[in-house]
Length: 354
Image 1 (cartoon, rainbow, N blue to C red):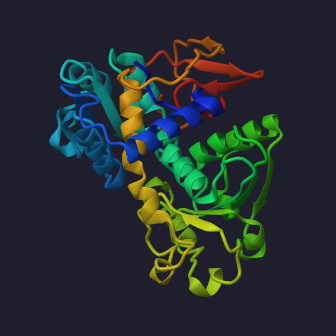
Image 2: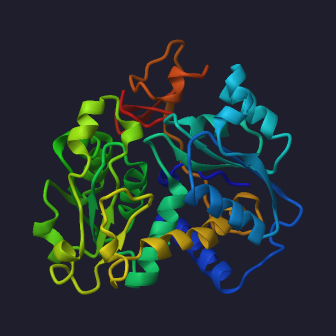
């Protein structure tokens, strides 16, 4: 059994093997792959594509599904902890698929659970299943993942899909990134530190128009109102980037693709939907075979050549040490663990530098 918590845990070859299994399932469906297994979908935060595609994926490979799509319908309303919810659920299901509003919640759940956990998005931290379907789409449309220039546009500070995809692409050769955002919502330092350590070329810019001719993948994101502590900052940031036929068609590479984790608000005009560049709905559809592969791998029904990684130094603390206000350590009783990587200290759960 194998949990999927962070894309950082997987090598390039392991990622390629998962994508290969997804392609096999897309081309040759296997409705009995995990027959008689039960998947629990615990969604503590609103979701459309992720929840429905995980449910569809489970059904398509033979599993039954239980779960909830709103914390208001659960015992959280009565004060139940996430720890107790996970311990209870593991008695009902063979795999837990969880989305949570707190950074590091998936890591915490994996520590607590006796069944594999799949991170369906934890706060502003990571979203590995979205990342794998993004990579699957890039590979199918561009014919490769190596030697790709990607422009990430929009909310890069809170955009967990951006964080995960940047980390994943950095495992492949010849990557170049443009991070397009106002300074207030630019890519976090912990991501750029990782890119610096790997020698990945990147630039922080505020205008996407000047770089379109270089870009293979334009990765748009919405400005996420629910992540902002300061509503006045959100009001200043919303609508900062809007792309349309007028701003894209004829001004970009002929084979540039536009991806978006969705939902969109106003950042992509619907007049782009019928152009050859718009791949976001196909991208969402690709989530089904990719998540089939993840569930099958988690339950040991699909094999990848996964090797246990050397563990970094872990320090336990009596008191909370993470300063991230949205970290799970601020809401649950944890071991307040710190991970030491290349001499720097990071929260074991949410990944923020201490």
